[in-house]
Structures are given as structure tokens and as C-alpha cells.
Length: 147
Ligand code: DQA
Image 1: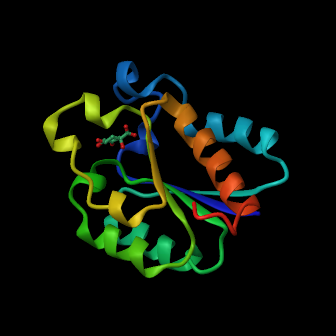
Image 2: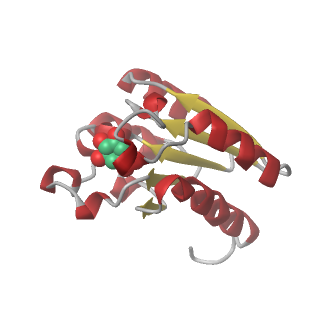
């Protein structure tokens, strides 16, 4: 099973950025742990602060991988183009957020990508990503169910 994790803008600063909201662990450190736990899954990681690069990565893997876990950061709330990219590919995309976006400012309550995603996981801290892996595993094992 192949899963691509994509992190958008400012998520390269996890561990340093607003630790009271996003925690004190870097994504690289967390990813090491994920790779050990899910050693049977091919987990690829890509981070970019640039909208077009995120779209290019979705196009690159989105017809081949078993799933994409996407934290589009603030582009979630602004990017029609990322929403269109998700609609264009065949791999299921799970939208994730570290924080509970619905418990925060109003402008974070709207997402341009949710309607194109298989589902949304928000508010479980950095563990939102492991929950998304579990969801993709379930989808992979139950392809015939109307998930
Ligand atoms: C975020 C929530 C977004 O509103 C914010 O712009 C981020 C991170 C999260 O993971 O909680 O950059 O996607």
C-alpha cells in the first residue's frame, strides 16, 4: 500500500510554530515513528509552501497511490485550485488538520477542499495523521463497501 502525505504552508515549522496550537514535535520526528509503526505501508512525505507545487504533487501521485493525506494549511481556506486538483485525481484524499479548525476563528470554518475529499480529520493534534492512515487502511480493505 502506497500513501502520500502532503503538508502545506508553514507546516515545515511544526515543533517551533505556535506550539500551544500545533504541539512541540517536528513532523520529521513524528514521521520516523509512523514509518516504524506502519512498516508494511510505503509512506512518502512532501511539504511545500507553494500552492502550485502541492497541486503538482497531487497530480503526480493521484492516479497511482492508494491514498493521499493532505494538510493544506491555510490554503484549505483559500484554494479553489487545490480543491479542483483533488477532484481531478482518482486516489482518495483525506483532509487533515492538527487543530480543530471549527473551534478556531470563523475564517478557518470554510474549506475549499472538504467537498472533494473522502473525509476530514481535524483536532487530534499530530495524531490526526495516524488516524488518516488507519482510515485509508480500512478503505483499502473494504473497497466494495460504500465508504
Ligand atoms: C491547520 C489549520 C489551518 O487553519 C492553518 O492555517 C494551518 C494548520 C492545522 O493543521 O490545524 O496552517 O491546517
